[in-house]
Image (cartoon, rainbow, N blue to C red; front, side, top):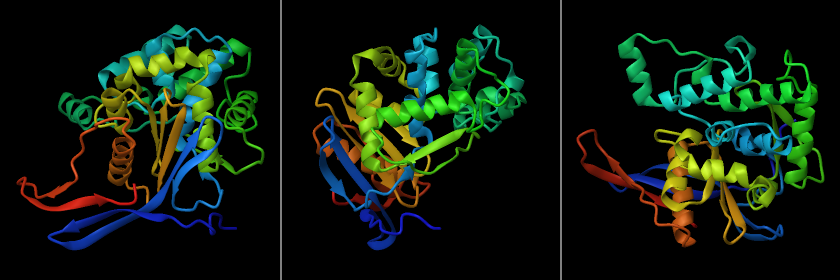
Length: 316
């Protein structure tokens, strides 16, 4: 059965080229306080769920703190983020694996080219081949395997929903996000289970994580290492570096932002998952709320640099 049929996304951006509308992108914004009060919304999500995708990573990594896993700040940042596969990420991942006796063949996240275009070009010129340690989810998988070793759990099927570690993760994330109902679970792109929930609960989970002193090491690791957390051209890295806010992007057009000082946060969900739209909407909303002055290019240009249009962010 198809879900999400009751949702009513709102128009968030309109792209014009020489005054002719070329693209329109719809979605949702939900801003929530630490007490669970919904402060502002754009679009009606009808309380229906969306998959967390990589936005689940910091919530999953909370188990590393909860069970006292011995990780450096860089390793924690790698565990929470979606890294761009650059040399700093690769070296951190390899060191993480060696530290816990994890081999490349133990990791079930799969292989893809680095997200960094610069690193892709370097590897092509050098005749290098990508491997599992370039995967943007490698930090999450390394942490799961390290937790299995710490807790005496089997490693072989750590990626399966029925594995005891995945059940611990589901219980922990459900608690942080204050879920009172059960929602669909699927596999993320890297093969491990990923949960779904209403947008409001995503923000609540982040506030319960990043505003809790018990998880201060995790928060500090991200704030001190925003490039290890993401990398080249990563929206969350840019926002953390320029505003000091906690931020995480996820596939499917998601981005969650937390303001620890005000103890509130918001989530953006772009219906067609357009990444440029996601970044501009998030930055525009941050700036409108007075939480930062983050620069963004709203221009449409030719390859020669000539401006021939613009992207207008609406409703925020």
